[in-house]
Image (cartoon, helix red, strand yellow):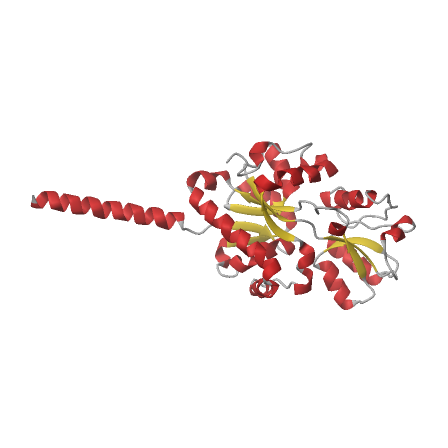
Length: 299
């Protein structure tokens, strides 16, 4: 009898340890890789509390982040993730759309409007990228097909042109546009989201397939936490600005609304992603992503 009790106690203790470890794993931390700048706003309040789990990178290293498959989650342009998925170079699935466009047409010209683009050249950045395609598509909806000046490499470069050439009309992006306005009150702009009914699906949150297979509970908890963090960009921008400062990323609070951050699960955003694909299918690997690309669509 005594031996049986000892065996039962040992069994219960072992079971308790297994349950404890399972709970700890379910509630464990997760890692995320994200471009610095505007996309970082969406997770800044989480990253500031545990920076070791977050890696902030430059845009040109995003494909390498997908290829290494080290992070549980990646925030990246949706077209990049979709193209890699279609080409079997990444298994990461789209979990949510989190940014809906931060592009701005801007100029120092007095009373600047789209009409100016009928007579003056437009300087784009990122020729041959989805940003340039979206910008030209937005203008075409208003019957405008502008003459183009030589394209520049980045939004930072078009911002510099905007600041130095009072006649220039450029495509730039937040937070560069707000920073330029702070330094020159003659600068005004038209956000592309004002020209498109639903904005466009710009950056998304991607989840690693291995993480999904190994710990569904962790993924569910992480997505909820990220959704809450995204919401703070609207409800508490002061907290987001403080978090960005803690991460040593300067970001003007006034630029946050123009970054259009809003968490929408991929299963609900599929139609809107496909609407963006229609603008330039080549940017997405030639056409709409397969249903398997969208996490949660099958549930």
